[in-house]
Amino acid sequence: MSSAPTLTVTPQLHRFTLPNGLRVLLAPDPSTPVVAVSVHVDVGFRSEPEGRTGFAHLFEHLMFQGSESLEKLAHFRHVQGSGGVFNGSTHQDYTDYFQVLPSAALERALFLEADRLRAPMLTEENLRNQVDVVKEEIRLNVLSRPYGGFPWILLPPVLYDTFANAHNGYGDFSELEQATVEDAASFFDSYYAPGNAVLTVAGDIAVDETIRLVEKHFGDIPARPVPARPSFGEPLPTGERRQSVADAHAPLPAFALGYRLPDPTTDVDAYLAHTLLGSVLTDGEAARLQERLVYGDGIVTDIGAGCGLFGSPLDSRDPDTFTVTAIHPPNVDLDQVVRAVDEELDRLVDGGPGVEELARISARWASSLYHEQDRVMSRMLAMGSRELLYGRAELAVELPARLAAITPAQVAEAAATLRGQGRAVLVIEPAASEDSDTNAGEQQ
Image 1 (tube, rainbow, N blue to C red):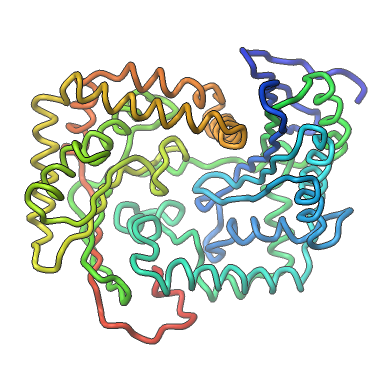
Image 2: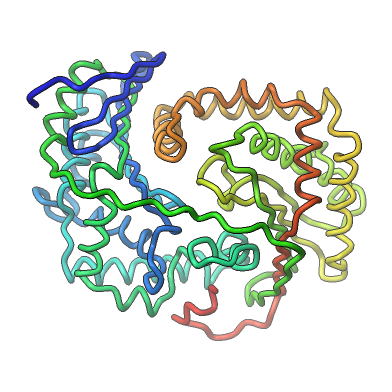
């Protein structure tokens, strides 16, 4: 490159932006003998256009089917031949691609990620093959599985009104089958511009040498216009919305309650108070709903609560969803369980959690987060996603301390927020098994 990038440095984090717009985050850690490389692209389920449900996830598959310099499966062989691991995943607001290799293979990892970000192999053969792969994934994970799509596919259309927030991100079979190579090329050109992505490199790296290698492999990817990111915000529901869905494979009835969360970009502490609220309610045998409904009244067999449709907090932009999910015997009335949930929330509104109760929950979260951050791959993915979503990779390492600082009063306020807004109630009703092959409408 003609000039050295300007670095922004925080403790153990180094940021710069290439002339083509690619944002780069470096997190050196000499204590580990590996390097982890990820590319987070600012496109997820909520970005895909109407008529192309499931396209963000389909495209994640296509990005593993060869690239400008490598034939199909070569990426796999290069990573595995170096003793590494790799994968990708699609979320509401981003898609990530990542690999972890021995530190000596850093340049190989950067070359592989740059090559497919430059020009993936988008052919009719690859497209048709991956549409079939995605359809089979839907059959296995949703259509043929008890509680398939519960709650992440089935709850949003009850709680939300807009297509972006409510539609099925796994995709409708007919829409997947109608996708063309031209659609794929247009999607790539629109969303996979360097300026719409964050490259994160963590582990046993030398900063100056890593900058040189990033410039070498990513610097010549042509800049393209970055799509304007729309707001996905919509008004809060004004009352309770209820919908029932038949499940041919579910052995017991189930339900999910869905509530809107505070915007983590503008009020992260209020969001984190909801995270702790979910744990106070259902995390561990001493949690309030576990103790009352599972071990006390015996009216549910399983219950959980927390932030995020995928069960992970801080994994999307606003709007995000707080869920309470439960499975119960068929002779138990749904409204009996829902009333009990409301009563426990009201108790927390009035008195909040005890100081020791909250300290126990915070310590459990800290232990889990520190354990997760011990793995360079988990740490890298958390930093990359939060850099993309909120512009603050630091959140990944600040979380234990920020959660520990949440007070009982803030958790009580979170409970009051839930009780003061409308909500969705999704009911899963066991039904006699019916023959259903490729009708993706059963996912809606």
